[in-house]
Image (cartoon, rainbow over all chains, first blue to last red; front, top):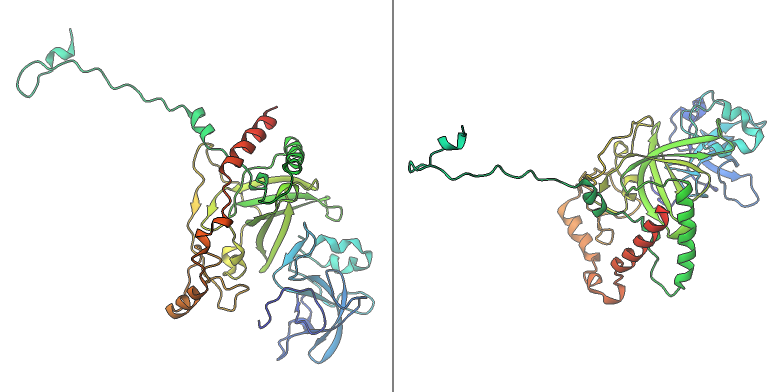
Length: 121
Length: 252
């Protein structure tokens, strides 16, 4: 990759889609990029919703892990991971193989995403 | 009847009686006491703070150690940590990983564990004295060539993968801690830090860079640093005092 800095997710960050949805896994000549963060500050941490530009379409997504070190005892991942989501909060894919942090359970609106996750950290 | 009567020298004269050699008794208790390990967070940093602050902190650390066993481990050993998590399934989560860094002094001492799960590298920074930690298990106790293994982020993922269901490796108490002289192979550049530069002083990487690049990296070496007297911090006497204090308190 070109940029090496480990910051949380903001506009124009390239992210990695970790579920098994068709949109996230079909190859395209441009990587999926964040175009908006639904947050008071423009910086997205674990559990925030963002707007992604994938394959020329706009899609909402949920951040499940980033490269930036967070509070102690929370995991730090080697890539910025994201799960594609509909407007009502339903996940697009059916399985998530990569480990998900337990902190996501705090907000009850993501229970459907956590239900399709296999590994937790 | 004596067998020594039959002993004859090479000259033909009767040989002198030689008693059998005495058995050598190795006192294992003495050997064990010789190796003492003081956790690095006990050693106070250099500065002008009142030593009373460190004394009070040490008392709190010893209190915690009496209730909860923090084993001896080094950077490069493989640990398994169980923490209490209100959001986890059984309210407890277990993480296995290699210790890549030990930082902080006093009660805020931390260690970072790294593992690669399902092709995703995960690092967790744990605080040693956090009451949420329920158990720390050392699965493999060993040292590496460096004090800081942050370069494992830029190394091939096989060097950071460890089995989550690994069994603890048994070792005898009085053995020396093994030093793993593994030379790690890296992913192609760019890396997060320029590990070939002498400021990091890394011995555990097998650099496959061309000779020209290695020589160019030496341009940033600061050979005068090791002779700088103002940077010297001799901790041997401080360690002796603190070791006596800590071991006496822990025996009570």
